[in-house]
Amino acid sequence: MLGVDEDGRLHVAPGGALKGEIEIEGDKSVAHRALILASLAEGRSRILNMPEGDDVARTLRALQDLGVAIERTDGAVVVEGRGLRGLREPEGPIQCGESGTTARLLAGLASGFEFVTILMGLPGLRRRPMGRVAEPLRRMGARLYGAGGGERLPLCVVGGRLRAIHFDPPVPSAQVKSAVLLAGLSARGTTVVRERRPTRDHTENLLAFMGARIRRSGAATAVTGGGKLRACELLLPGDLSSAAFLIAAVGLLPGSRVTVRGVLLNEHRLAFVRLLQRAGAVVDRMQAGVGCGETMGDLTARPGALQPFRIGAREVPGLIDELPLAAVVAVRAKGRSVISGAKELRVKEADRVRTMAAGLAAMGARIREKPDGWEIHGGKPLHGAEVDARGDHRSAMALAVAALSARGETVISNPGIGKSFPRFVERMNGLIA
Ligand code: S3P
Image 1 (cartoon, rainbow, N blue to C red):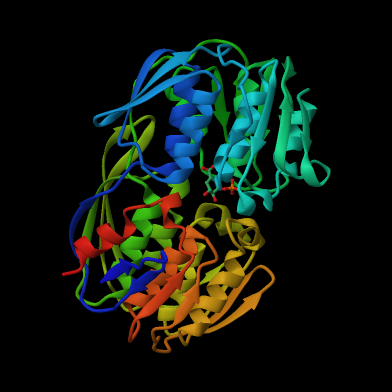
Image 2 (cartoon, rainbow, N blue to C red):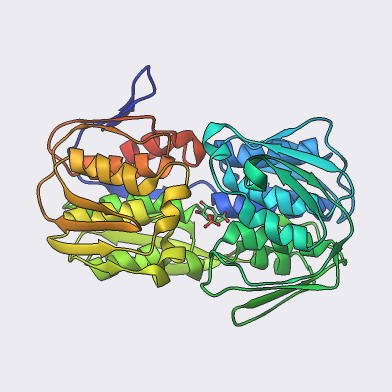
């Protein structure tokens, strides 16, 4: 069972398999994009299955600050789109909280408007790099001024008439790519982003779904400025990165079997499902439909004898949010696993390489921190411990999954789970047989 104490620490007591069927709240990445593009559409959009986490709430509030009428009604979020040129200057700074997606996507969006937008962040987000998004936007003609020599929040965006660019992102990042594509919507000409390593493509899918002038060929995506976005009904598929915690726990706990219904099955997000299969768990996938330009369906997971594995830089972008969980699977698989090429984990909500190495080692795992990942000798039994997630939601939930397969209780401080999956505890407990 899982529980939260009055200091907000997460307690995990092992025991029991996970069983049942579950539907999960909408995907966080898709939700940010649905809110932004619905705000730029002509007319009223309804978004269904909106997740309740803090990050998406920041984007919703930011768009309201930019003059968009958005209302949460029973079961739907209704967005009164203002058209591609209809946002208005916010009256004060926009608070992005701890949401990197909000800050980076909004930097791109605001760049195309001839007014001043100030993007603020809470302490964790203020430490994260923003130069990667500021640089291409400056090339498009926007002026961006940030703390730390333009590298950090607060960021002041002075938008204007943009010109299209050709952009080869030096760091694989869906947030940076999306910022450039959003700016491209209001630029003169055709903006092209060419990715060396593909990242999640929800912005592209939703732009196409809503009628933007977008073309994709191989690694390149081209957006031509102008045109119109169609308001629509957008059903958000369940969050695959949240579902990952449930199916990973199923993979580790003998006798478990869980089906997650209506979850996102986008090819660029399925790498963790494939990794679990490669490691020996059974995960069956059934495609069931399409929601806002994204494939969705059901996943059924069962445990299997786990094998060690290797992950290198090429696989990292597709697994970026699931790497803490991959470390947990490696800790439970007998033998040597190596996860490398994952330096990006050091600039997420916390330094995830360090946080997971410290947490899993405290639970008895043989794990060595490397500059860009971990080396793990799996198969040692885990025991309960006091660990610190350092405010990182994904490390907290990954450590909770490890704790479910340990002996004795684990206490996780600074879990920060409200960011993406506020119902994690309730959902997990609902599945414990
Ligand atoms: C996201 C992209 C990824 C991911 C984050 C959400 C997105 O970040 O880690 O949780 O919605 O675009 P990067 O673009 O920095 O890799």
